[in-house]
Amino acid sequence: MSALRRDRHELLRLGVLTSGSGSNLQAILDACRDERIPARVAVVICNVEGASSLARGQNAGVPAVLLSHRDYGSRELYDAQLVAELQRSAVQLVCLAGFMRIVSPVLLRAFPDRVLNIHPSLLPAFPGLHAVRQALRAGVKVAGCTVHIVEEGTDTGPVLVQAAVPVLEGDDEAALAARILVQEHKAYPRAIGLIAAGAVDLVPGAPGRQVRLRAPQGDPTRALSSPPLEGER
Ligand code: GRF
Image 1 (spheres, helix red, strand yellow):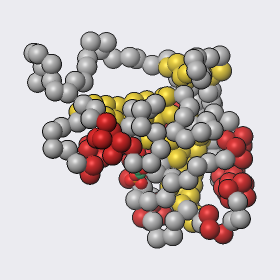
Image 2: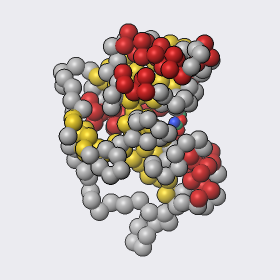
Image 3: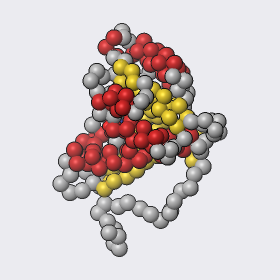
């Protein structure tokens, strides 16, 4: 059993990788600023010029680096430069937040079990692109988001936090994605907080490793159903 331990007296140094609007980045920045999690964003790295995530980093007084993948001949060369930037900022935990690239073993080996991702589905359902569209096409009644530790593969790795939302009649992709995003903004800081608190153990599982949490589990009778079950609202 391996615990993702850390020195409890210091703020966990985060590197957040983004490609787009950066609303999850903003949720993480806000949670750090408000001291809801013992962490600080040490650097924001974005691979897309003009993305608003860069401005969000700058507005928070965090170094914000544009690192375009177009300037590198291979995924590995790009990821090596990512690693250099992250190490320059003494990053301890890497958070992929809407980072629209598959990361290579170059990054994963530099930060073993220290790369997180958020995905807008209840993994292992609907990995890959257009997860919300996939959920709607499948006709599921409950959707949600997952924060997981990144392993090689697309949206695979031990699950840290999941949050579920109802799928409503008449939902289109934008409406459901917006409802999921509200939960993403809570789930990502929660996952980072668990790691920062040293509350995460990795244990063998089937088929892959699993996360065991040393944290309160809440009311074991609570449930989210869609539609509501008898007696529920
Ligand atoms: C989120 O839905 C996240 O789950 C997915 O990409 C989106 C990023 O949104 N990986 P934002 O850039 O954080 O606003």
